[in-house]
Length: 342
Image (cartoon, rainbow, N blue to C red; front, side, top):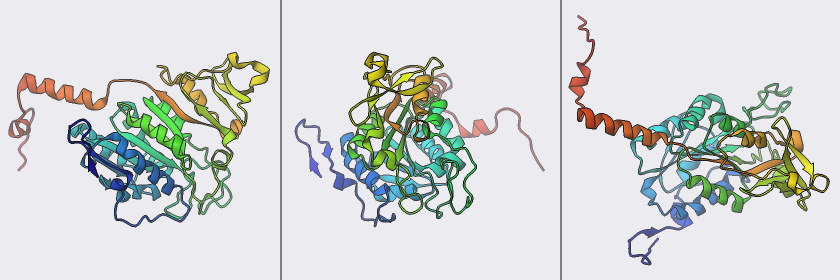
């Protein structure tokens, strides 16, 4: 660390090394979590926030070990409950930068309700969901994002569950910031982290993360084949492919489809608008998947402004205090109807 004297404000200029702990990183060799950890540690100095004002909260799962490896405050919490705990912390300590690290099993199974309510309330937290389409920590059972037919220890004949699409879930909950990136694309992941950190309110980022032990190669169609990455860039026509020969346009029914640019012309393509008030087009983009078009969109799907839960709550507290003065616990306990039990 070194003191930044350029503006004389005494701020500490941190580096990626300052966010690395002395804990042994204990993920399976080759796990995609290593790449995500390195990207986050390298990005954190950009926040220009002291480490004691940054908090990482996790639930249960492989991704949940994240707080151990970040030289910030952190908490390895309860299965699926990280968004609820983060909500309490964010509303009570608005001076903190609160991050949630979770997995597809942790967030979308037992933690499903906590996730959607944190998003709909627009709590000022950043949620990173590592999606590997499997339960890695508990030895490879199928998860809420596992595709139909996936064979695992708990589905030896193939999963018959229809999977969640994490982005569609977040957009359905009207999250104000929704994005997706890939574990091995450090440059793109950093861009997405930068946008998420700058968002005021709940930010949801899905990261395609490879589990090389129990579900190896699940996302190779975009990790290895870059031409299958549908890059979303605000204000630009959506094009992709080895030579940008493919594009995305809207059908009459509002759904999105992949087209040949040479056949339809660039003017027919959808121009991405991440700031559109309505989430319907972003939702249509989230439905473009490997199963439907053989490719997947990455980038910021939605980034809109809406009143933040933390600030609305603080306004109510201030209004109540101004009207009635500071509350007294004894008066509260003896207010309203009371009973004496003998």
